[in-house]
View 1: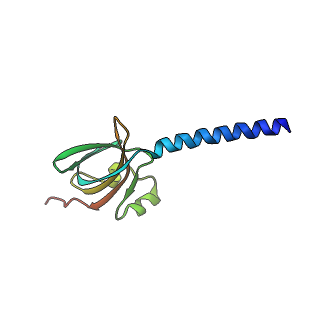
View 2: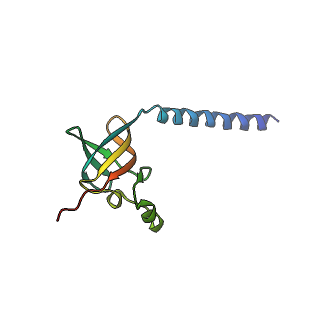
View 3: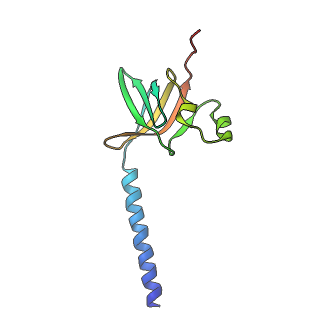
Length: 116
């Protein structure tokens, strides 16, 4: 009985620790910005909004939303360079992580018009 109570107490302690970590992550304020993609690389996205360039970190947790991306996702993971290109209009939902701005989601609102 004592062993069972000790194990239960350990499990509860771990759950509390996980809750504290989750709470710290959720305290980060979610913000949005709309603008034009200036540059794209494998792990970052630069968006110009209101005359200011903002660099967002892209990782495996970043979601991309836009016309045709569901079809691309069926073929495999969609990368930032698959989803967006320079000149595209986007809306980025992000978190300010101190030294970096982490893009939680990138919605493509309008694709760039190809030049002729």
